[in-house]
Length: 265
Image (cartoon, rainbow, N blue to C red; front, side, top):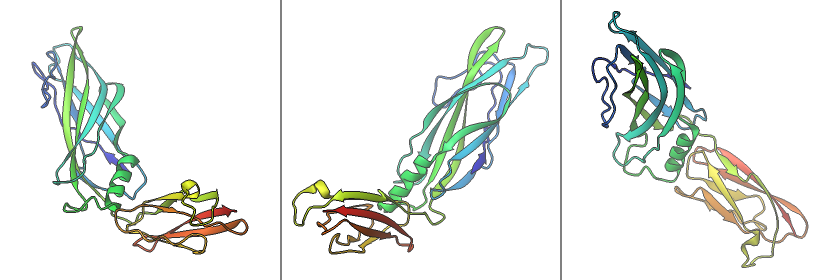
């Protein structure tokens, strides 16, 4: 999914932009810098396995034609996130390097990647959203920065802009199980030996899950896992001959995933 980036800042006059966080400015400049953000907010579906990108269009304009024009360079940007919903989990931002002479258009910028979406889905399935909105709202703070060469005296310019978004599950998430297959030499139960135990991890889907075995004499059905439990371990019994056992995990939306366990005596 692509979202059109919109910065709306201007660097002009003596001193230029001052970063709200302090410390940034520029030498006397004869160029304005404009970055426009559209739309102002968007809903992000954590079940969509595509990273959300942004396209930056950065314009410049000479303020006084009688003065030498500036040469501005965009060197990078950083993104940080502020929660607007009390109790919502934090999101970690990042710093990104770019190298462009301004003006520039059609720059691809990172916004929300699959890792952030996966973390939120795990929070939902593990019951971390108790007492707060299921779909919390955040502000993404973009800070673009670069150098400004004017009269052969390099300066520094910085610009900050915000973007609001709500993140949650707006469609049905496809579940998965890992490992999807395993082979083990099983010991006779009770064995008091974890060497033949197998641990499975569920992702995606809609918690809670329930897990059944098609051969309960060899692997007992784990049953209902409950919200907050996306991991389960089985301790197989020793078969008389190599045997394949199927474990079926079904989520609250009646979606199922299968893991195959091959047991050797």
